[in-house]
Image (cartoon, one colour):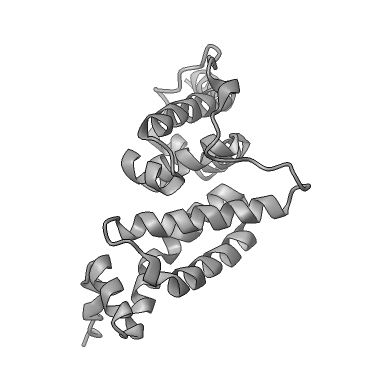
Amino acid sequence: MKPRSDPAADLPDDVLVAGILDGQEELFPVLVARYETRLFRFIRRYTGDSEDARDVTQEVFLKVYSALDDFDPRYKFSTWLFRIAANEALMMIRKRRPEGDWVDLQTQDQDDRDYTPVQLTDWCCLPEQELLSTESRAVLDQAIQRLPEILRIVFILRDLQGLSIQETSQVLNLTESAVKTRLLRARLRLREDLSVYFGQQVIGKAKKE
């Protein structure tokens, strides 16, 4: 016989949160199981370090549990959760840096205001297997790490974690317009950064043919 699944696993986030606040503490592990992998991947992509990501993920859930009374039900629980995760990940990054060498994610990125990408190599004709190869994913991860923090976190939340523009703006306390602008800049920078790698793949493919 198949083991019975936990009926709580199908409950919406807001119902789980309400139950936990009502004293059903056994529901909290359901929230953890629902989000821990997704949070870990987000934090690892942002910090660039798996060990840091494990530590931060654990700290996030500890903070969520202790601050659950402060959750505003007008917002999605996942948005609140990612906001805490973004703050904790940023604190971890700051610990690695000299004092004062910090980035404020809410500042205006004036140095990028007139950013224009160089001519890019078109890799539209590469087979899907090549784009999804282990090597290509590693190159993409490295390119993401080279993005400025204010662009990297928007790209990860929107394009890799699948948050909406509105949710991303709420997580980062930015206007939706700022999110859209930073997302566009992140995509352009990644495309420029990856153009050399994928251009070489196009050349290699052409030689084989």
